[in-house]
Length: 398
Image (cartoon, rainbow, N blue to C red; front, side):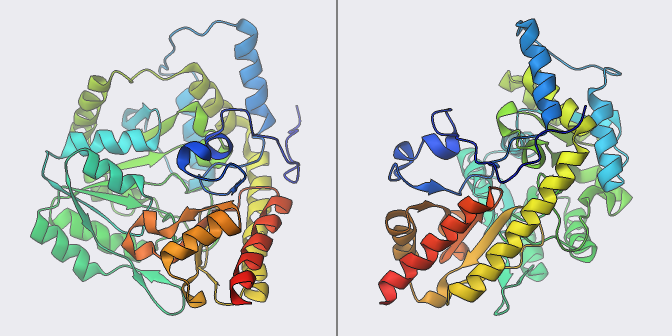
């Protein structure tokens, strides 16, 4: 059966569907008429193979307890995707399913550290990292990324090592590729981080959820850079970003060290959420088995959107800089050249432009003056958002 959902210009009405992105502006303190480009889900219909697989589930109309087992096709679908698209040979004994990567991070924080222990991240970074660390009563340590005048982010490795040593860091949450700054870390950069973590016995939780969207360079799976990295790494992946399946609540972890896996599962079982739901199982298997054509098409469309943003901002919006998007479908915009302070900028975007973006400040203090925009949407919506940014800035200039 041919793929049917390849019209990415089609606008799907998501309001009134309990969409977090569209239906919760008021509850989030936003005007109800904002146009949302914040949370990282797509405005595209996913592959029609997922639609067909779910139709089969609905036709049975029984939604009892579900699980996965060896040889039932679920893991084989995941392994096939990893091999085809990343040349990564994953082993079934490494695999742990969880209901989302944020859940997995929180579980890892409790499994591999005690209250008061230090956990290190690299801000500006995906804000749940910080929230999870603090909510679990751990000490937050940030090895802030270094931002240069060319709009490029790098890692201060001396600071990384010193902060690990000074704070006796137990866990490092790596964002690879990095959200929101869009870096695709090189093998050399990751090797420096890995060697430091190995030296100080730091466990690494490598969030690689965006690894199917790489525009520059090559994605390096952290645990595969050196065989010894497998001994202290938990690698998190999910079909949610790739196939717009966040609501299906399914992520896939790979933990080669069986003692680390045992600790993770022990903590996981305490949560009472260790059984996967039928929708997560079904959508994951269908997408990873049959979704290649859709995936290649959506990548092409998103890349064109990224290029469109870059061209539009450069030609029409003076004072705003587009940070090179090496990976993800989240574009990081630097507004500091406009001279508008971060608080006023947030107000301008929300109340003048009527756009719901992600304020850079929520990603850490080094994100102040930036905005993150999700470009996985029909071009017409994206063009409307950029026009609103342009118009709102022109109003305050003139």
